[in-house]
Image (tube, rainbow, N blue to C red; front, side, top):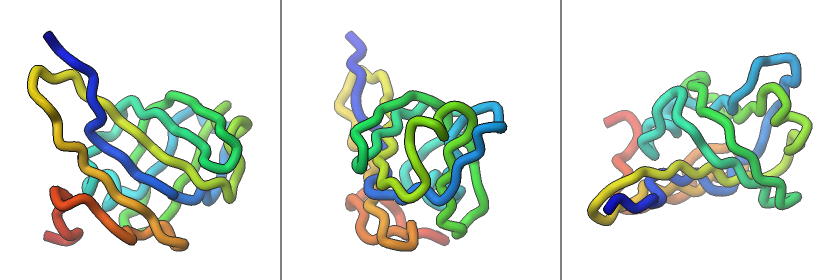
Length: 122
């Protein structure tokens, strides 16, 4: 039996911009995607810590080290610039998955990470 389990989590990121005219997705800095093992185009659940809004979209790679989290398309109408968000991705597996988790600081850089997250740049 396959079970759906958390595999990637970015917690307390701050939305830096929104672009309603873009076709969709959430732009996430490449270094943070790498840290939590997210692929470009991977389905993610985005939860606003600020408002409680929840939405599904896909991850789009943004500039490495930029700290830019941009909601694109209709998602920009559901979660506002400045909101704190959590981004979650799940995997189907037969065995337990050890999720890669990071918490962002005020500048959307890694403030803390689970032990299985390698230091950036290695």
